[in-house]
Each structure stands twice: as structure tokens, then as C-alpha cells.
Length: 439
Image (cartoon, rainbow, N blue to C red; front, side, top):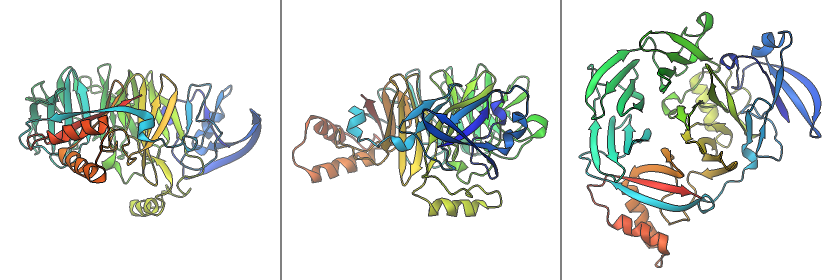
């Protein structure tokens, strides 16, 4: 087993849990539960290790740099960091996890179809659905599916967004992060209020105790200590003060445009992760510390994947040549009892961690729907209580219902309920909200 050593008192702003490009490897063999472990130190921690009296926390890890794991699905370290052995969790059938599926038609939007759903929030009895790229529109419905209003403001005016990166809801008001490094504020009815220019551009954001946290998208900046580049920065709109909470580790990411739901408040905890980083950080005080580390064992990307000499084109080529390899592609969702994310491994898989009951489940996103014969759980757009919510174009529901009737002539109660719902859809129901209820 490979083991990674973190200095226990090292500020996580300076920790690196990405696959580094150069390593100082020190073989120290110890016995832990009769298992011999191999310790790997990163050069970036060398200076910190020289500090007198420094306590070192041993984290049993297999990251995307490759290693082996125990016959356990997770190990908790003394620092409260949980290592999740993904390779030890056998993918489940949908019916092993979900016991019921309900459908709600989202009605009467004049022109919105689900070309692409980038982010969904359910706040105070309203459903907020943002299509960042295709429609570049935010659509709002109540929980019964009745259309309330929409914000469709692509452009370069003061009340417009050139390209949406993220959005949030704060006390009913809507805040949109524009790719130009601006925050645009709309009231609870979608009416423009103001915009604020940021001193940096950002890809994702959230709000914690009145302050904003922004993910800079790994764009070179000098927001960190002594002008170092910063990956997650706290910013106060009134005082204009910035504070780096996590320095940039691995700057390469050719898929940044696909990263959504990477910085989120979930169940009172602020989580952060990014593509290729097997660590899910969580906010602790005024810093981020590793909360979960996903262990993909030996089925990982080649060691030279993140060689700084490689271009983004070379990196994309490596990914295309290694589609059977595993790496984290976070889509963080959840609540006080659940934490969800995703990873690639010759397909897209979803990790569902029931933290309350300490149960971990892996589902392939294309896994057959053997609950009611409807659509697979392709996307997890948000979580409400124990329901995983997927928003999808009604055309897909109608197509699946047609195929189900071709596949069989007799239907059980749940299958018939799905077919009945589909038969009642109209052209005025462009979207469907599907709730997959977890057992």
C-alpha cells in the first residue's frame, strides 16, 4: 500500500494532493494492522518536515498517481480525513439504491428546452435551473412545476452576462458570476439590481458568513502569499480584501469548461474539489483541509499525465488513450446526510455516500432503470432530502416510454405509473423533474 504523509500542522493552503510532476520518494516500512506501507513524500512538503516538533499524519492513500488499497471501503485517519477505496465498492443496480421514482412536469415556459442543464438549486420552494451555454437562461419554477419567471440576459450591458460561470441564491436574490469577472445581482423576481467588478476572474463561487469564496479556474494570478497563484480566494465586496485559502497545485486542466458544482455549501459544510484531484476539501475555520480522498488503486492515469512540459493537447490525447483509467470529475451534491460526486472509469460513475448511515454506493450513470423502466439516473443535478433530482427534456421521457412499450406488453405498477405520466405530457411541458428516492 502506498501512503502519503501530510504534516499535521501544515496549512492546507500549501498542501498538494494532486499528482505531482516530481516526487522525492522515501521508502519507510512500518507495520500497521499487519500491513506494510510505503510512504511517499512530495518535495513541496520538504521544508515543512524540517520544522522542529512537527507531527506527521499518516494518510493511507491511493490517488490518481496509482497504488493499492486495503479490503475496506474507507479508512479514517487521526486528522479525520476519510480515504474511500473506490475499487472496493462494487457498482450497484439502480433498484439496490432507489425504491421509488416520481415525476413532475415543468410547465408553461414559453421557449426553454434542456439543451444543457449546468446547475440546479432548490431554495424556499422554488426550483432554479440554469443553462449556461445553449439557452444562457435561468428558469424558475415552483415545486408543482409551474413556471414563475426567467432571466435571459446574454450580452455586454450592465445587466447582462457574457458567459455564465456560476450562480447562487441568497435570501431569494439571485447572484450570477460572469466570465468577465463580474457579479450581477437580480432581485427575487429576476429584476436587475446592480453589478460588481471583481479584481480577478473566477469559475465558481459560494458565500460563507457574508464573505465570498471564489475558485479562480487555475488562471495565473498573484492572489496568494508573496504573490503566489491562488486557487480558492476569499473576497469581501465591501472592504475589497482578498485572502488566499488554497494555493494552486496542478495548473493543468483542459476541461475547466466542464467543471460545475465544484465549490458548494452542503449540509452546513463548504466543500471544494476539481478535476483530476482525488481529494475533496472541506472548510475548517479560515482554510480548506482534506476531508475525503478517493482511492482508485492501481487503475490510474500514467505518472507523466501532468508533466508540465506537456501541452493541453497532449494531455487531452493522454486522456483519450486511457479511457479505462480512473480519475475524479467532481459534481458535488448533497445535504446533511448525503454527499455525492462523480468519477471516470471507462464510463461515468456516481459515488453516493450516505454519511449518516456510513453507506457508500457506486452507480454507473447509464445503469438500466430497473425500478420503473424509465430513464437511468444520467445526471444528479441536486439533492432534496433523500431524493436525487434530475432535470431533463421531456422528449427523452417520451422516447423512453415508447421504447418500454416496444420491449414488453405487460407492466408492473411502477412501470405503468411511468407510462401514465408520459402519456399526459404535452408540448407545453418542455422539462421534467425526476426524483429518485434513495432507500
